Image 1 (cartoon, rainbow, N blue to C red):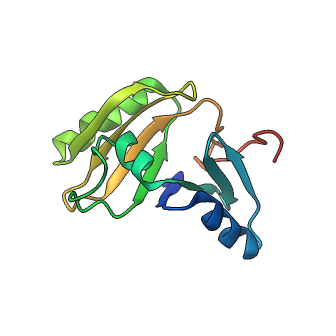
Image 2: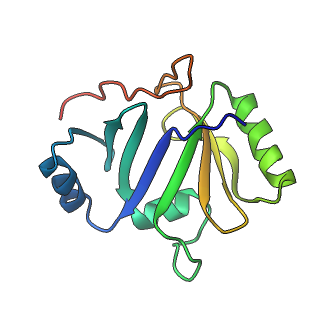
Image 3: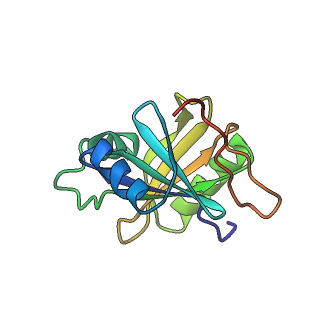
Length: 144
């Protein structure tokens, strides 16, 4: 596995409040389908509803699971790479919380928890290009 974090997703309780907070710090966000994306150097910071994020990672609602509301993402170049990395994580002792599946955004992703319960999304998202060095660029997602 490449040593890379592509996205950090924060599960938030009030998307508008959280977006306003980061924008007051000078960040520029783009909102698509109740998800806000910020470019942060060679990776992305994402704000998404906490309960929806937990469900996306295979946790019923995140309550009582130790879910901290943070998910790290490792984006890959192909669906096959997603399957291979999830299999490697399982062999290394991870718990696959959400098997790889087609996503609403036209990609392919699954999730695992490391031995301490930290969640990772492993994804292929053709809409978020990866540079040769693996850095991610959030494209223009449309009108603000």
